[in-house]
Image (cartoon, rainbow over the protein chains, first blue to last red):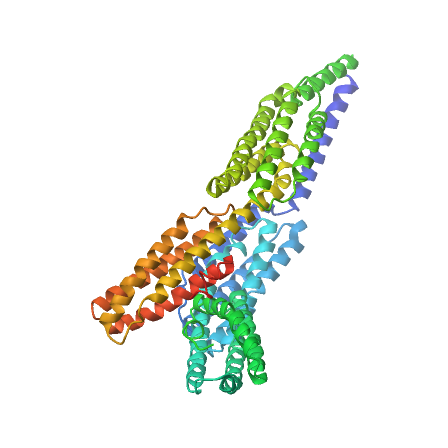
Length: 291
Length: 286
């Protein structure tokens, strides 16, 4: 036996030992990552299933109950996940996932409370917060390789929040339509103008009704997720109001040609605003309104 | 004894590398540079076409595009790619060659002032350019095929504006004529019979107007907007038909409810027509 084969064997053994050590380091020592992920996702599965079974809420009490279920379920998931031994090298990452998950029950409880009090503004705020926290938890969990924990919350909680959005939209529509119906009555009660002078009088009374109405609508809590269409239609109406003020000024100055031109300019603005209110379900504020 | 093994391994690696590179011919990078170099001037020539504002200018622009593309294709066919790239490159050249056909069709249609054919050729041109760009990009080219897309931008935008201007003029004329006819119909009185009579007369004009608007050649790229207001017009006419039927059936309650629906449908249609620049058809003409 020469020394060479022995050296070779030794080298081979050393290389194997180094490879094993490297593999162990890669796995973080103790628990392997795949094993942890499987265990963790398994621990979250039942909770996700329970949330998926929650019926889409159609009113505030149902939304409050659903939010309560979210809070208790995700609390349990975070506790279960925290109790699973993570790979040594991944401890900080896993702690981040657990923390992101543990941040979900807070806005869920706020939603439960706000919906329980039928506080639309707080309900909308809590719903937006909850969606944000759920998305953040999903991103963190997915980045680590988890599919059930965090990521699995998005679909069932999304369905519940969609229900909440519908509930809040219905409340918004009911309140706005009621405001518009009242304002329409006030505008209808104004004496119809018969001359430029009476136009000035009419517009002087009409514009404050119009302005108050749309300020009141602006003050209503916007349904979460509908910020853009609501802002859009209110911005379109702002253009109409601005034109009405110009028309009022023209009438007050007795400038008939300007009055006529401004009315022509206003017509498509009214159509554009009305079509947006109609499309959102606010017909009494849109085509069927006086504004 | 180790040296020969190293040499053998190096030979194997070289062979593998050659196989991976497709073997023979210039490297792909060199070829791509050469090909793109031969397309650059043509793309610049097409991009230099002034945005057309009338059919004559569209025809001239399209002729420039067609002849330039033909030239690019001839130049590209003279290049020899590596063996393994031959088929893919032939696909790129073929896709670029396909652009020439609709460019010539656009030239022809513009020469005849045929808005419908101009619109169709422009849409075909855009589609073929998109395909050529996709194929060129997949091959790694940045000029051939790919550069055609921005280059035909002026020609396409100008063509769209010219066809749209023709569309708007024709549509507004149709609407003006229809509005005059509708305004000549006696306003309904307080009886359902008079409402029924009014709607019968109005619906004939309104249905014809909707059909006439649909028959106008759609400006290329505006298919979505035009289809949307045509659909809104159909919805309005459907409500009008329902209202006429309710009046005929002497159902006053339904007529009142449907008149609100009719107003809302009218607003939706007018908003779309206004947004497209059809003022006489939209709010102003109502």
